[in-house]
Image 1 (tube, one colour):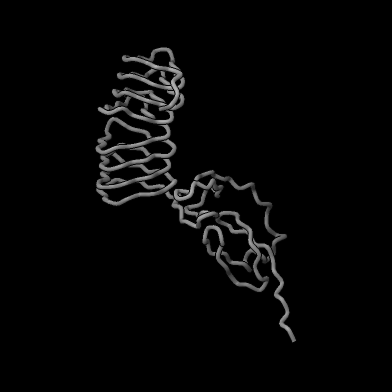
Image 2 (image 1 turned 90 degrees about the horizontal axis):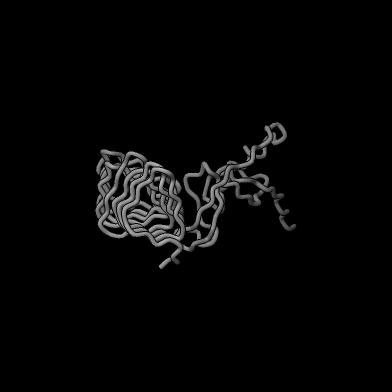
Length: 231
């Protein structure tokens, strides 16, 4: 006689929320989207006794390799691209000593005042630089620079942030999508979008931006070209 087909149930990954069909008798499985280990029986036991699930907090990101837009749980430490299956690191890194390695994460990358990252290529979500950095840095969302930062090499950022009571000097033109200056920046700045000069800001250098917001008290010394298209 032909074997009976096993009854299947829909299980939800506790890590990324992906749903997939599995045999009801299965003990465990692996999420086809993020690779998380799933205990099938634990999910099936007494579902009625569970408290109502809260809506999951999601974060949006783009795959490093193929550019596919993804949504993952805010608490996830990693995920897998649903299109190209590449692994995506979502962890935060806080560096407080000397490190020589490459970083590639959608999370936060923080170099503390005593931290030193050298001979590196780092592609990160948000970067906060208080210590030393030697290499190539790409901060996809934001790059925050403090006075204690010592940067050698080159960097790209979605949004440049200079906090109040901090200063940063750079010899080459800085190109970003946007900038928020509350401290002091001595550099030529080219922004595709909006540059905001807070009331405590001091900008010494030429500025090219699509638009400029200047709060009362801000100081700017240099030429400004506002409304220019990105080059």
